[in-house]
Amino acid sequence: MRKEVLAVSTAIIAIVSGFMAVAGTWKSDANGWWYDEGNGSFPKSTWSWIDGDNDGVSECYYFDGNGYCLINTFTPDNYFVNPSGAWVVNGVVQTKESGNSADTKSEKSTEVVTGKITIGDSKKKKNKNSSKNNEDDSDYDDSKDEDEDSSSSSKESSEKSNSSIFKNKLDMFTLSIESSENSQINYNHDNLRGNDWYKGLWLNPYTHTDAYAEFYIGGNYKKLTISATPKTNVGFYDNSIAKVAVLDAETYDVLYSNTVNHDTKLFTITADVTDVNYVRIVCEKKDGSEAHILMKDAILTK
Image: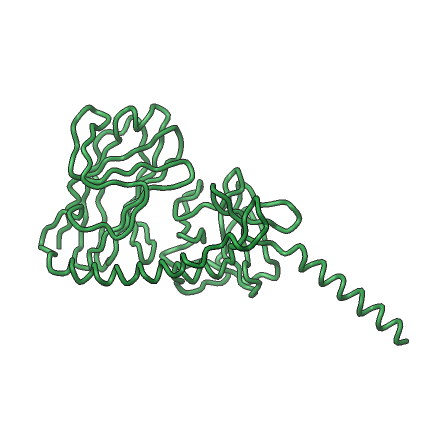
């Protein structure tokens, strides 16, 4: 009898170990993050509910045609994913209870909704700690979390320095940039129509990386208007398509969104920024070789 019980126990342990062996893990390389489902496969061109730390709660992520998770941008079906890649609605990360570590579905669900999470917490929660070309966990850099802490300190300092310059009417581009990527302030470039634009914001997204710039306005204003236009033919080709958006950088609420192509002329961005502390201007290249956007006269009014 003992032998039979021992045999059954051994079989159960073997089965459980087998499941643990094929548990999915986040991995990365120079092009971004993807999710290894444990059997050599990974989701592509689809949404996936993934429970990265096996706590029974999954977040929803979108993976492109190459299997990379979209980060801090709009998905092809016009949903927004935050800096950790999780689907958010009105600033809230969407989750659901799940018994599986990865559950690929064609439609999203809002069965369970959790509160807002910080960028630092979400990075740790997803346990993204290995490389596509090297299975050694040493590739994960814990210093990024420390950088976020120092970034918070610099933001507090910036808030104090900016608080004294908030006028009834202010050009936001005269404020210091809190954080940015693939962007430049005080440029001097020609736009697509041959006019010279200067002293504004230049956003130049790449294939796997959006361009953005973030500004602290401290909840002092109600309305933001910005003049915007595609850059020259060298920076915005005939087949180029870009998505421009204004976000509340704390909740990731979309305050403005517009699709821009080669036929787009000068356009005006208008956003309600009531009670918004941090404004993020985002440009995402949707198609084409280049999709650079020029902006100026970012007027804030109370």
